[in-house]
Picture (spheres, rainbow, N blue to C red):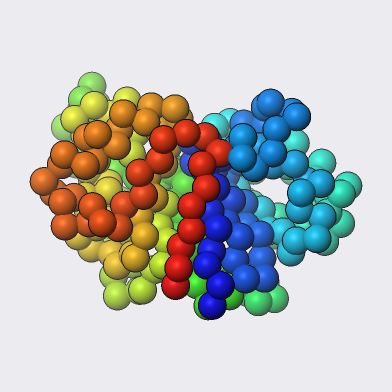
Length: 240
């Protein structure tokens, strides 16, 4: 199997080039308009010959940009997989939480987000990819203790469904706004799910979060599997 190419587009946005598909997850920042993948921008002219599939986990503006539908003008065969909380008349497959879908040579399973929309588990070209969307352990210091307890329970229930599934690449939120709680979701995921490559996300341009990740004793056993990002548009490879 050929190496898989991955680009960091921004926040929770990634592009993944597999053997026969070009997958785009939660793309929203489309500037500079003259940019390309090396800038973290999708230029549909670059993808005209690709079997392109676009995934959107939910409608929050840091995960969804309606300009993605303009790509169809240059990529007529493009396919869109959208959470059903997104209102649109565009041709797409709308998905809801806790379901499975077959789309040609893609198999898609969804989990319920702890915020809005879904998380995606995608089987394609012999790979298993997990993109969490906003399925995360959202523990906030100014929230009531009971709310944080219920959040922890909801998050853990969803992640526990992944136990025993061999995941190749997992995109996991780590939000610096949560202060000392930012790594709770990553910590739990690494202890209860099996992923060969772990890619932190939902940090925007705050790359300093990686200093915290790589000094955290709870993630120490997984440091060799965690991708350390340093700039938008960064690309790297996964070798199955």
